[in-house]
Length: 439
Image 1 (cartoon, rainbow, N blue to C red):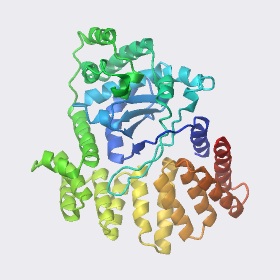
Image 2 (image 1 turned 120 degrees about the horizontal axis):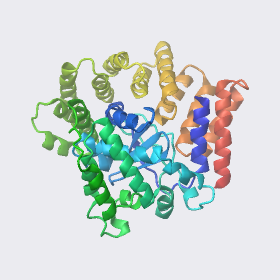
Image 3 (image 1 turned 135 degrees about the vertical axis):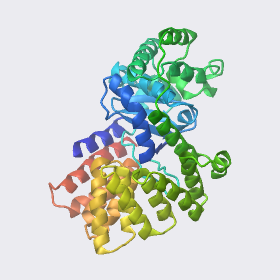
Image 4 (image 1 turned 60 degrees about the horizontal axis):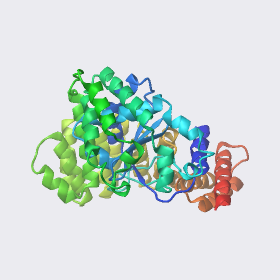
């Protein structure tokens, strides 16, 4: 895990030049839904299931890859889609760029392309579920100048053609309707006549031409893929329902849902009421969900979040404990449980919180909010050196390298030389010094 941490933070420093920060949406339920949709497509592409689909909190339409293990999709694009096969079409297309090595050739030229070298992507994209928002910002560092972005991400027409062909093969192999690829392209048609500044980013990085559309039409012709199974549609509706409930105004959600008694309607109302906040009505909705699916860890987690935000900490701890029992390896659920345990502020509670938070960190080491909670647990137990290490790592992930250096230096003086914590502090010091020397 230490090697992975070093790699991710060094990527941030080797590709600096952040002009704007974007937030990453981290939610265990949404990530599970995306995984359900992605798995058959990734399998068809010959890619490992470890490829992670990352949702960027951005209302524009875009999707892109930057390495072999992450596919980024803007929330605006996800909320524009109508059925699960369209999500799978996007994932299949980006998976084709990975399988065909398109990003790798481009990344190899970063050292010589001055504009592209100023484009940074923070691959440690993890942030805990923020209070009442299920989002937390960690700088994705995907910005720089638009010209640099185009140089680094823009695919050639040949790459787009090969990715389209491969994606349709993946869709057919996965049993998904390949016509969904045309439906996705139709979303972007009509923008070609707009000026570059008014087009969605996807068109700037994935050239859309009439020839490309005709080629996709020819590839799709004669293939009658399935219209999706009930499981795919269920997770698509659940994922997009939760996403819109958190990103749209609560009043908008409540108007759209009305008195609908379906499961997804209960989910959307629970989130809308939590955000108002109206704790009692939120709890009534989430309790209905738990009654429908008592073995669902994500509904128990949501119940824990609602109770935590309502400052009913004892009940929140119980709800999170049930969620962990149902999903003991899910890092975001573990992180929420550890955060709730800290509210006890007793020696036994802090020790239990530390144990749970360390389990979460072992699976998700780049979660700034988790690192903040971990530092608090260490500090309460008198482990000041480890508290400083966790704080230094959190500041490094947030691009606050001077603060990271200060805390890493403090940790170096408190921890035994050569220990795991001391080595982590040295990693942060090295990276922070490189970055500070650039400024």
